[in-house]
Image (tube, rainbow, N blue to C red; front, side, top):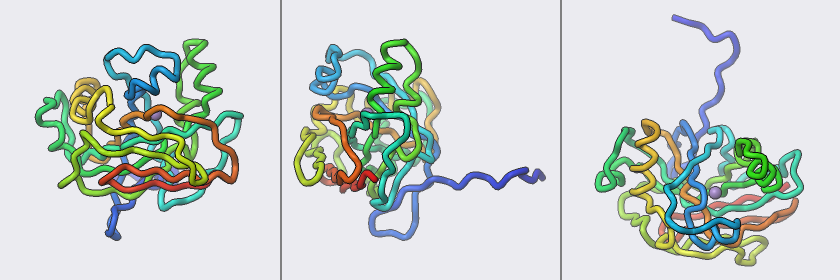
Length: 228
Ligand code: MN
């Protein structure tokens, strides 16, 4: 039996709607450019290129409608409103037809992005980690069990200070939720506790200290944070 030399890190966890139990989070995978109109606004070709991924550390989570501190080293903090999939049953090489059986539930999430650092990384061919995986970069709302939720359609919307900035529909995902789970499971063995942020629609924009962000996905729930 081993004894840790420092206190072990806390396990990041999502709230579950209507429950005092929580969902422990293992990894946070994110899909890049998964709505055509967002790919176009970012200067990319929206044709159906294979999905690609980046990640955030689990402890980037911000839950319980908590405030999000404006991050250091950036003058361009962007919001990206997304549907988040929580994996309950792991697996590798999952077939598209079986993929939804691996889902524990869904929630709303914000893939907060230091766009200036990400753009610099793109230009220089460097990793996106510091643009995407910084502290407090993943505000998420309460998780809802998957039963009865159809992730193939439904309004996805973000308001900043009450004004709609992003509005789209899950039916516009280039790669559907089952396709993303299947594809990702051919790259890594998915495990219980993994989250997948499925990509953002068009309308991403910079936020400032004091802004209140409120996102919804129809049939799933909401996410809320204030930038401080
Ligand atoms: Mn994103």
